[in-house]
Each structure stands twice: as C-alpha cells, then as structure tokens.
Image 1 (tube, rainbow, N blue to C red):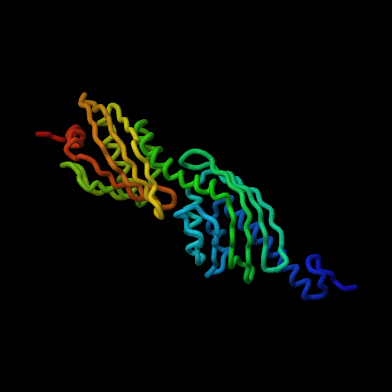
Image 2 (spheres, helix red, strand yellow):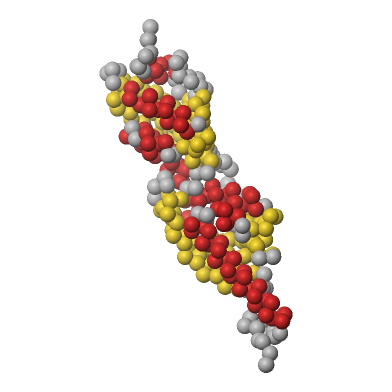
Length: 286
C-alpha cells in the first residue's frame, strides 16, 4: 500500500516530504500571528530569513510598500505595534499548491494607546525557505490603515490635554526614553534643550505649578508627507498663580520613535514666556 498525498495526488517519499513542508509552513504562519498578538518581537524576528522581503502592494500615500531585510521588517513592525495596547487577532492559515507557500486570512482589532480602536482585515501570502519566511505579501483595507496614522495626531492632542489636566505622570508616558525638547528661542532662565524622558518630566514638574490654569487651543494639526512629523499650531491662554495672564501663539513639531514622542520643537515669542519663567520659585525678575 503506497502513501497518498493529501495535496497533489503524488505518492511516496516525495509526496510525504511536500506534505511535511506544507504542515511546517502552516505552523510558521500560526507562529507569526501568535507573536504579533503577544507583541513578542523577539519571537517574530526568529521567523524571518536574513534577506526577507515584506510587501504591502496597496498602501496610502506616504506609506512604504516594501521592507527589505529582517532587521528592517522587525523595526518597522515594532514601531507599528508600539502604538497598540491590547491586540485581538483572529486568523486562519492553509497550504497552497506550491508547498513553499501558505495563504492566511485575518482580522485585527486593537486599542490604541493614544485612544480609540483600530480595526482591519486582510489576506497574506507567505513564501518560506528553510522553514523561515522569505517573502510576505499582505493586502489590507487601506482606508482603515490610513486611519491608524491618526494615532500620532491623537498623541499630539493628548499631549496638550494632559498638560491642561496637569497629569504629569500620564503625560510622561507619551515620551520616548531618549526624547528631547528643543526651544530654538528660549527666554532667559530657560534651557534651549532638555534631553531624556526623566529630565523632561522633572522640568515640567517644576514648570506646571506656576500655572493656576493652563489652556490651549489647537488651531492647526498638519501631518507631514513621507515623514512621521506632525506640525501643530496652538494658542496658549493661561493664568499664573501670581494672578498674571499668559498668552502666546506657538508652532510645535513632534517626531516619533516606537510610537512615542522622540523630539519636540516649540517655537513661540520668548518675551511673553519670560513672565512664566520669572514666576518660577527662586527667580528674581528685575
């Protein structure tokens, strides 16, 4: 009695080898989605060949459609998933006629750290070499995918909402560990550069108590094309604890790393902000 292949009608050792190759490919696909659901980037990285290619043939303007090399793929997905809280993935995987290929269909629902929910669904084709993913092609709902990039806009809005609430703990969680604030035109007594999440939080813990009330009005939010930068135009209307009123018109530029704020440039009239600095404890305005 000869062994019959479930896939091609072939028999014998060659068929058995192809059947095992298909089963291994399906296992890799399942491992792929399990790693994404757990946000386990180390396990995810182990699934790829060194020179693997990740393709998304249809993407929104400004979003790359191809990543080449395992390190580039992992870095890209790490930044993507850094925007996410809880991840809920469902998927199905089945072998294709070519024993090196696997077809998967999936649905995704995640809670965004900046607020809101991202949902998408799609189909993916894996091509394996030596039990690892050599090529991966994915088709997604591009309208839903484009909406995800609003998450960074949401982070910028949350940045100001938390300052208004004086919730410095939650505000600090928006920052990358190596984040930096740059103030190109600082007033006397205020640094032009603050580096590191801890230093930034400490600086604002000292600054915010000067305000009795801190309100901002965002008059423009402009994501950059082919960049992760967001430009925000905003007005400040604040009352200081000494009774003075502080107003200013600002332009800020946010940049991101791993879904967190890595660089923040703030442009404003330093002459007006001088009143805030002079109100800090230990300052002796003339």
